[in-house]
Length: 63
Image (cartoon, rainbow, N blue to C red; front, side, top):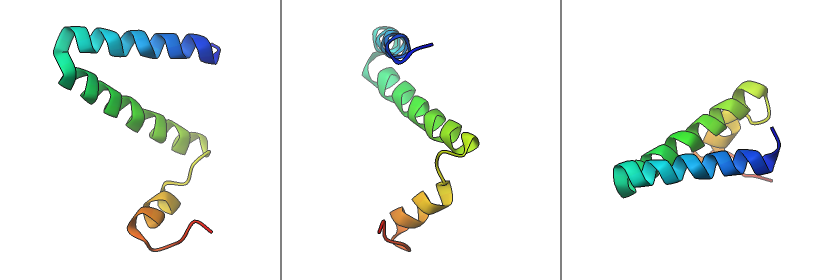
């Protein structure tokens, strides 16, 4: 599935959630999608969650 088709599917899902459940349904589904994307990248090895957490808590700098 290419990026354009993925974007269309995500947009359709978010539109459905906003029509069906209002603003908060849209927000909650978008947050869950973002969390799922981050966890998926962590499983694939594209992102190191420990480094991200350390950077957010100020233990390490990005440089």
